[in-house]
Amino acid sequence: MGEGKQMTLNECRNELRSIINELRDIEWGVRRDFEGIGQDLCGNCIDKIADKYDGVLARLNRVDSNRLADWITGE
Image (cartoon, rainbow, N blue to C red):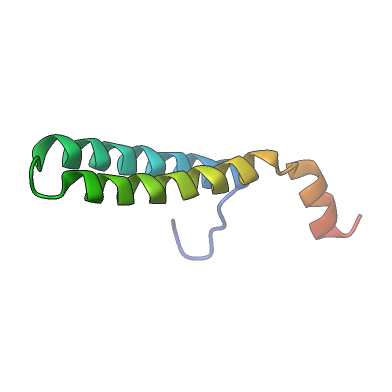
């Protein structure tokens, strides 16, 4: 993101989805590749973080951008 550029709500949602997908990929890799050395504990921690981001994304998805724009402009 360039200096002075603000992210739109959709860009925030897309970026958050991308982060969640990456976390899920990492979790899957840990569970697959680190068998016997704490993969379940580590995988569960990553899953918990991804779940929190899922909750944030759900909240962002409920934001009505039209109402938000009206609130920001004071109309």
